[in-house]
Amino acid sequence: MSEAAKPEVHALLHAASSTICYIVACPTTKQCAVIDAVLDFDIASGRTSTGFAEQIIAKVRELGLTVQWILESHVHADHLSSAPVVHKALGGTIGIGDHIGEVQAGFAKIYNLGPQFQVDGEQFGHLFADGEQFAIGSVPAKVMHTPGHTPACVTYVIGDAVFCGDTLFMPDFGTARCDFPGGSAHTLYRSIKRILALPAETRVFVGHDYGPGGREIAWESTVGEQRASNKHVNDGIDEDTFVAMRTKRDAELAMPGLLLPSIQVNIRAGNLPEPEDNGVSYMKLPLNQF
Image (cartoon, rainbow, N blue to C red; front, side, top):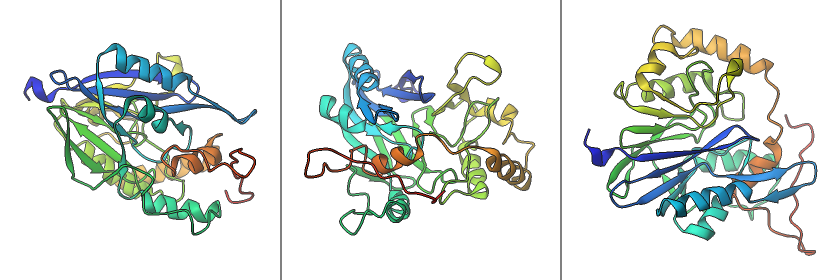
């Protein structure tokens, strides 16, 4: 692969949600994408803040980059997106996979958002189809629809690197849960196999890391390393074995603490609910739905 197809990757850790946000840059044109930006949120006080988003913005400016894209790997259930904050400061188009409408439709019912809430993804600047090609500067990029964790998850293949969101984690942590609405362990297994069919030297960048066993936080591996040693989906594990493991494990997991506030913001492309007549935005808390 030519040097022109190898993007520079800068990772920023949002410690409170164990999320890794990426700035992916073309080394020749200095254009970039920001992937999975986080908005700080304190659920106890109901207060949002932009400290982490400002770190992203400052890093982009320090590197002398121009933002082309602000990309979401999926509708996150563990943090609020700061895509609108980054967009306001730096420009760029906010993009997500074109199956977002399935997620919006399901959660619009749960939150009773009414007919005024559009469930066609119109809140986002661009909806990526499976296999769609684009570019970051002179670095070629392609979108893979990789559902399973959610119906709308995508993996961005940018040059020699893939950004897989929550679909795949570091080899010693495994894979994403599949028990959210529309999730499927069978589908996740097949999606991951698409990723692992890429060349062995392909760099793999994950959306979260939790430092299992107390090791240092990490976010980069390769397809070859994943195939050899991912504890859930290495080459020696078949689909039925994976599904049995994933189903049992998911049944034991607690719901993410920020799921209910996160989803209703993230299906709006990171925008808060419209203020009411007193100028205040309110989040809904649907009772007995999960």
